[in-house]
Amino acid sequence: MNGLLNCARGTDMKVIGDTAYFKSVPYQFYQEESGYTPNTIRILTKQEFLKCKADVVKITICNTETAESFTRDLLPIKDVTKFMEPILKDDFEGKVCIFSWRA
Image (cartoon, rainbow, N blue to C red):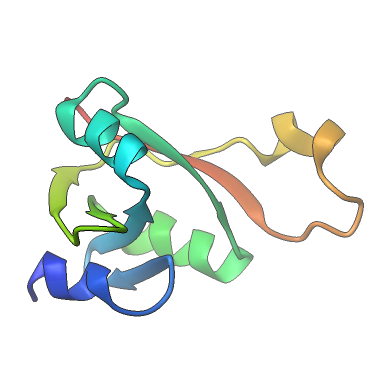
């Protein structure tokens, strides 16, 4: 499927096949696309996290204003929830993850 179509509709994150689709605001998008910031931090549900860890090997980032997109091969997804615990609410049940790729 076309990454542009997948990014332009719906929620902030979805998984289709082996690719995770995320949206980024223009400033972040251009930093990520250029490789200056070759990662993104995202909050996932436990179900989304498990699906990403099991199936996802690529990431597509979409600009929220222009629907431009780019796709990269992912490095291993990092769960940094434990490091974030001091600032998370006690009832937080998701995962804080870093998605990184080679620039």
